[in-house]
Image (cartoon, rainbow, N blue to C red):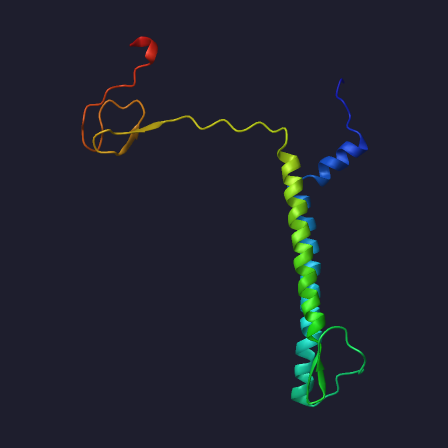
Length: 153
């Protein structure tokens, strides 16, 4: 019964700092930014190309933001498309820095992992990998000396 209850803020912090929650947040934000690029590509290039090919109307002719060019009276708004690409790159860079900072914060205070124990060595004659405590090399059949600790010499 001596179990200590976590506070709401501590539980929320633990939930938010899980890797899968952060990955999901990044995915949603990058997806939204990429959606803007696709929307701009469609509105700025694909729809006007369809209008040029079919001789249809492009809709309202108003003032466009950014650069445009006209083919047969159809306005191609490449400025909006380039703006969406720049927005995507800025969002991706900021998210990269944010995730890098979160990963750095998560690694603070963690102990480094112990190196794996050495279980093999190299035969001094044929340079093949053999078991650490082998007395004879299975490749070249040379007799090997066991590694004797310094205290026993």
